[in-house]
Image 1 (cartoon, rainbow, N blue to C red):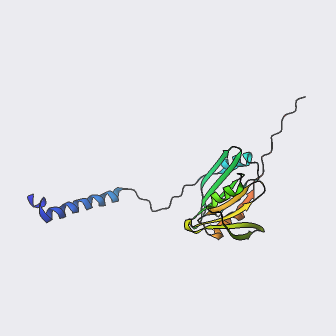
Image 2 (cartoon, helix red, strand yellow):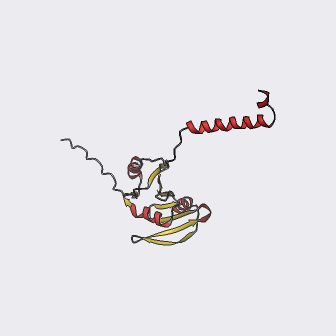
Amino acid sequence: MGRFTQGFFGYAFALLVCLAGVGLFLLVTPQSRTEHIPRVQYGIDQANAVRAAPYEVVAPRQVPADWVPNSSRLTQDGGVVTWRLGFATGEREHAMVAQSDERPVAGFVNRMTNTDKPGGSRQIDGVTWEERVRPDKNQRSLVRVLPDHAVVVTGTAGWEELSALVRTLTPQPSPQPSPTPVSG
């Protein structure tokens, strides 16, 4: 036994035992080779945004089948309603639509796009959207400023995927007040 505990043979034997242990560990540990992107249901945030926002909320009608909604956040702070909805796109990039009635509008837009420099414009279904680019963050943004709020579509996705998200955006109808019974 002294032969395996001393010198080069002892070192080689110990290394072999360690490698066998690691191999056994890897063999019995479950491993997944499939991609897992968390999926969120955003219907409640959408309904709450429509109910709370003093502006016309837009939401995706139907995104491409291989897109995964992976984040939704609705905030109401001092009367300001902001809703952010994020997706993993078909190219596995990030795309997000953010809308808010925050004032000043430029502050919201600059924060969402990570830049204050417009870079051009793009016509999408007859509507002009301002383009902004932040190259060091690999971020592209499409901005639309309306009288009472702003909509920003942004992310690491390419212009085509961002434009595809814009094309799905549709105004959401405001909830109708329920009729009150008339007593007589």
